[in-house]
Amino acid sequence: MSTTATRPPASPLSDRLKAMNESATIAMAKKCRELIAKGFDVINLSFGEPDFQTPQYIKDAAKQALDDGFTFYTPVPGIPELRQAICDKFKRDNELEYLPNQIVVSTGAKQSLANAVLSLVNPGDEVIVFSPYWVSYEEMVKLAEGTSVPLVGTLENEYKVTAAQLEAAITERTKLIMYSSPCNPTGAVFNRQELGEIAAVMARHPHVYALADEIYEYINFVGEHVSLAQFPEVSERVITVNGFSKGYAMTGWRLGYLAARPDIASACEKIQSQITSGTCSITQRAGLAALRGGRASADEMVEAYRRRRDLVLDIVKDIPGFKTPTPSGAFYIFPEVSAYFGRTAPDGSTIHNSLDLSMYLLNDALVSAVSGDAFGAPECIRFSTAAADDKLVEAFRRVKASLAKL
Image (cartoon, rainbow, N blue to C red; front, side):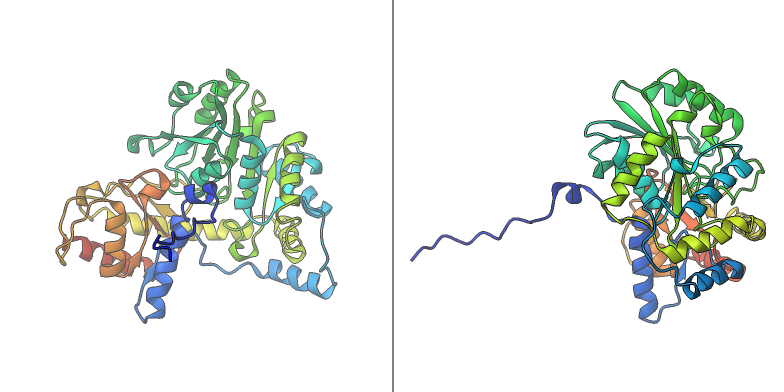
């Protein structure tokens, strides 16, 4: 009888999956829900989700679509009238001219981003990711077997990458630039001069494309929103991604879109056709109503977000060790918190990094936030300000009290 030990079977999981990380925002929200289910009064500031209801006229359009029996498959890139409405939106809001064949509607802006990355990036291609960045950018690049090249902005410049930094980072292997404005997680907004300088750098490197994430476009506290595609010298090499989740409080509806030159849009449609096909027919009708209804409801929400931002900044200015730039858009604050690294918690454990600190705040203050390492900024923590005023006041009262124990 053989005495050779039986080896456990090798994992069947692919190498690409092993290389990817779980979304840190989703992971922290999961921990938060688990504590809530156990009866703890947790204030969740980890998720980037508006606390507003979807406007009623949008809900009514979805109900009407159901009543009309609009429940069948749609074209992969979206229903024609929605794609035309998106073209109209770009012309109205961004002074950009697109045709419907340049628009691809997807199941959320996240899918639009993934479609673009998978359509453009080959194994070994370098993707310059403006850092701090949204948690999924780097993971999408891994999925495409590209190489992420984080380019880190400074706190003094509101974490915005400069054109000089970009120029120095571009190599012959650079294929794509990825960034968001307004930015998740920092709230920074690139102005016209800054994007013009970035466009000038791209113009000198015709092999470089840009993926501009504008999902927070309407949540802007400084007035003008500028799109990189507005600069004619690079417009053909810019893929612009947007959607309905933030500006129209439609997170659960899962509706996003991209605009690109026809060959890139066609490639994204091809990718999508083999993964999800067309997005929900009812959701598309709701999105059509949202665009036709203008942005009045979004403007009302922006005023609430501005008030909440100012409310939170007024509180955190009195928290020692928090270095917090003033966000120009989105609904987050992103303080630098390294002053707390190396300190000892009441249970005797040491706070080594922002992950330790965010877990400490979750367990001690019952406030959930996301550690900055997931955003390429390990010295920071992201707090969402998309919560009711009283929740925000209580959350940061708890945070301040917990930090005082360290």
